[in-house]
Length: 354
Ligand SMILES: [Zn+2]
Image (cartoon, rainbow, N blue to C red; front, side, top):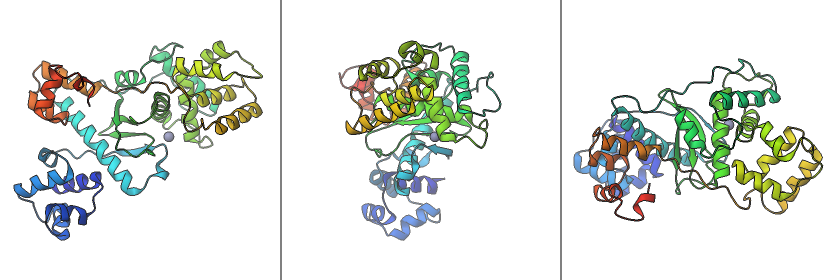
């Protein structure tokens, strides 16, 4: 257990065996033995390792060995194996802290994810995905309105949403996975809200469509379609834009983006998929978007969402005395002093930390 955790912490930090050996002043072979479990570091060495790897000693002693089961990345191919290990290590650390916290509640604070019961067993065309998205919205009582906080919707349905921050690779494009049978979605805090939301809705698509698509349907494209249909239902886009259009104004797209939290190019795909605009006109607009460099960065991004459920659960557990202050600080990866300031709302900046 200890051996595995040393290895994971090293890979998460992006250090090679040699780098770590140099940092703590032992041979590369010794580090290798620590990771194989054939040599156990003493407590002085553990403290050195913790410092070098930027974790608390407690990290090594955690008894859980969670794994990401079948992680599904949106654009895995662009990330190096080393970067992937760093990102996965970070994600696992967040998930472990959350699972540990939840295990300290007398009753589980998060409900089980349940696939809506009104879905077809088999989906045979892209158009049927519209119906699936509609059914999910219906069962979750979302109506046709914009979803202001998608993180909240997912969390309330038992999908845990995690966010990894600045140091994550900018190419990381989100993932969905199972951990201990639980569904998790991970987004990056570096992105605009419309990008985060599309990723979350896309990943929700995987959870919902898993095992339902016939072989002829490409799962990635199907999940894109689901994401668009879930964020901006066909009835809503029809009532906003009309059923057939020869031209669209950019301002119309911008206003719709701000209302529904889906990118302008996402809206254009919807308009094309639903036959509101012709393929040729869609192509023409996409060329215009490329010229303006909007395919990378659109103007006036939708504000980013802030997953806050972990922090909320920490304070819930603290208030009910399921945990003490030092445990709370540990879970939030903060010093006790800094945590106290946050708890007492003493520092104007502290509230926005973490
Ligand atoms: Zn996907």
